[in-house]
Image (tube, rainbow, N blue to C red; front, side, top):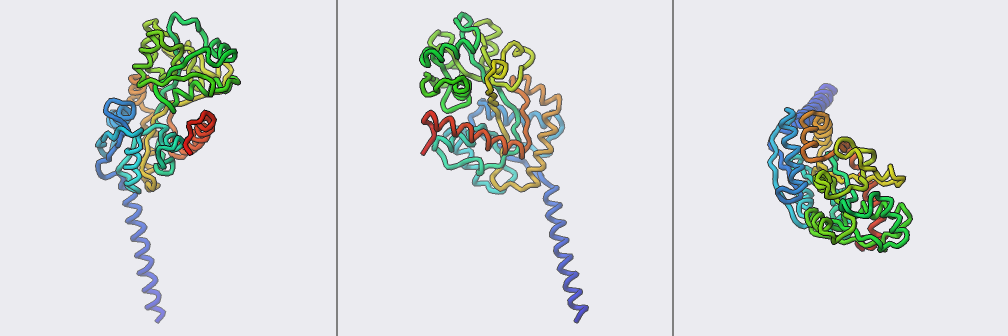
Length: 329
């Protein structure tokens, strides 16, 4: 009888070990097929460009184990793309490039989808935001603009590409930190960065807040001045003469980032794979060349840090959008 019990125990143990071995082999086998990379935007847009940059960077650096199949799901403020990702559940072969719309759209109330409906894998890169005026503007420093607003919140008209947005936050947060009521300041939204710059150059708007890549060529052509940048510290190269908000004594930093996400219940083994892969990619010369090409900046954060930063960002954004009446019910 004891022999039968012992034999049964051995068989059970072998079964457990076999299952564990198979699970381990399956985990280490990822990826073993092409990966769908969904860009939550139209071809040629920022999220499409980021998806293709990740693909190209991994190829050029010799880090790509399986090819990407890039799919564009634009429109709807990214909500259809994120809904599609949620439907994939635990499938690690469907990834997403997206921006802070992963929480902003939920705050303003146009979707129930939020941070918990994706798996943050990597904050890949960032642009920074700038205040821009025409070269012949009376303003030569952002502090002059703020001083006028302190006297009269309607003294300066601002322009942005869209609201709510980081462009908008790059106006509201510095003026709020300067003791100005952000609800009293006039901010006009235009259709796109191109329209925004046209309005500025045409003399129809006083100051615009936009991505630094939208402004740098106009600065080189001496058509505009850049008064401040939302970077945490002074940038180099073509941007070395632009003060940060911190340089001006205003405690504001805003990253206009693009990130890589997976479905909500992505296996930990796949998360670990992308932590390792992306941490290697961002250190390569090939990736630095891509950053230089698009005038992006390194802002890499792994899956754990990225998720923590998203939670903090959401809280800050929610407080401000509630204050100015843009948060949903």
